[in-house]
Image 1 (cartoon, rainbow over the protein chains, first blue to last red):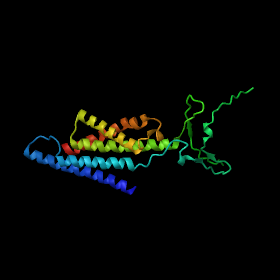
Image 2 (tube, rainbow over the protein chains, first blue to last red):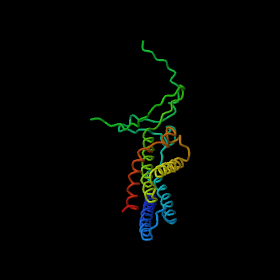
Image 3 (tube, one colour):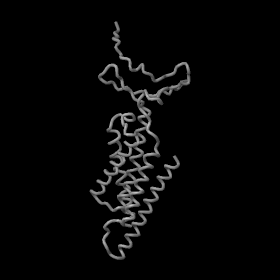
Image 4 (cartoon, each protein chain N blue to C red):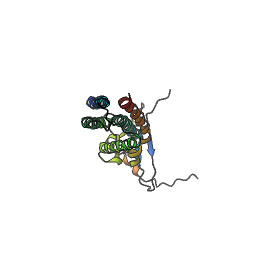
Length: 105
Length: 120
């Protein structure tokens, strides 16, 4: 968890460094009075690397995906309320068809 | 004195077949949706900063945003191990959720970075 955070911070720092390098490149262009076509290739490489670091951090930092299927192993006990006389479990009884035709006479 | 029973809201989705009632664990679904939103928002901000540094203007920037979102979608699908239906309701969630909300953050940081790097 700390490692993912660190990777994210490193990615953001690389972006900040690339921004600073681009600012310096532009001031250099102002001196030589050329047009700004695009940042130098080193800055572009640094941006791509920073993008991948941040992408990795964006996918790992928020947490893992949890299974939503009720019959998976980690979804067994649904609730253990304060009163232990009543416990709610997830089991395959749900799969039985509701073929009961109930009428109130 | 009421005793709070922390019941996990089971959301039923009835299908046509009588003997198959697919239910989903809502709490985990919310957790997964929250993770997608965090990831997309962060990637929108990062994409905005990169678009500003690269000096993209107008249409190129918006196309760049959708490219970033496509990369994020592939990343999220890879995070599920490409078994999307174990974690989400449908493909729509993993592909479309949070795209328009992220667009606003993208434009904000895009203009911010562009101003910082190219104008001031």
